[in-house]
Each structure stands twice: as structure tokens, then as C-alpha cells.
Image (cartoon, rainbow, N blue to C red; front, side, top):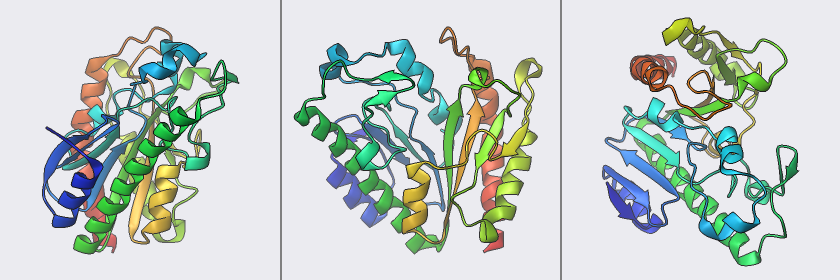
Length: 274
């Protein structure tokens, strides 16, 4: 694991060099074992929240954790390319466009006790911009090498807040080319439904049930790269206790083990369909 400036990451990607590094400011991390036509992303995995913001944030650490996607990087860590955020979405949200990436209100209450200083605002936006520079360079490199790329966009959601039955897995497809890729989305949904979880946790899987795939990560890649399919994949937080913050590592391990097998199968189906 290296610590690299974003400019050096971009140079290594351009040269096609495998590497594993954290950004110089520790805002995100990237592992490239080989330049395969597959990227696993976990943009909301991060929990870091820089100290300059502690005193002016209205949300507690638990409230921030509750809305983040802990362990989503771990679930896809075995794949050759993994890109994950390290900072909390409460500092800046990588799944929103730059103009709305810094929250004013978050889940029912103002985020800041007083207006965010301009220098802090710009620092956060700079991290968001740097992340997407790397995304653009990486997917562009992979499309140039392989012609088409599959991206697994991993998220989680708080299922207990819903006042109805919701699926263990939700796949958001509203912003992909469904005429071209809809059958692949359905194939991925079916694979997710076959995952076996500990403690008799069900593994239901639906498309556009709780979320529709409206995130900026998906939209940015889809807008810029016509031959890349992003599958926005949400797991309900059956792998933790939402109310206490306790994680269930045996459930995370079961998801990770089965995704290690299923994601390559989905990639093979994607490549075959081209």
C-alpha cells in the first residue's frame, strides 16, 4: 500500500501500472491488481470526518455512521480493481454532483451549526473533484483496453426505517440503458437472490424497489462512457444492528465469499453479451 498524490495515480493509470494506494490526503483508496474490465466501487464506505468540522456539525458520530455504508468495501475487496471513499458522506457526498455534494440539511435537520467557512467548502469540493479525475482516467483506460467495462457500485441501506417489507438486495437501473443492458440487470438480480446468508436471513432481490440508481457515481460513468455498465447494488443492513452500530462479521464474510464467485460470473455474462 502506497500513499500517492492524485497526479501520480493518474500517471500510473495512464501507463497501465498495477498499484495499491491511498490518496495523499487519505480521502480515497484504489487497488489495481490488474487492468481487468471490472471495477468495484464503494463510494460511501468511508467514516472519516476531518477535525476542523467536528465543532460545527450538528450530527453525532452515530448519526453519521447510520447513513454511511460500512463494510461495503470489504464485501468486494477480493476483486482486481476496488475504488472506495475513506471520508464520510457528511463531509462531501461522492454520490452527488459537485453542486450538491456538501449537505446543508441531512436527514431532517441542518448539518451545520453555522455556515461552513469557504475554505472548508473548497477543501471538500477539491477532494470530490480529485476522486472523479481518477474515476474518469481509470474507466477510460479500461474501455481503451477492453472495449467495455462492468462496474459494481456497492451500497447499503437502512431497511428498518421502511414501513413495509423491503428486499435484502435492491438493484437501481433507472439510469442505465435498459434496452441494451436490462437482461444483464435481471441476471444480476437473480444471482443476488441466490446468496445464502447466516441465521436464516432471507436474500430477496428486486429491481428499483427502494432505490432507483440515481447516484452521481453511476450517472457520471454512464454519461462519459457509452460501453460501461454500472450496476448500483444495495444490500439492506442485515449485516449489522442499525440501532447500536454493532457489525456482524460473519454476515459480511458470507457476502464477501459469495460475491467473490458471483461477480466474475456476471462479468462473463456481460462480456458474452457484447
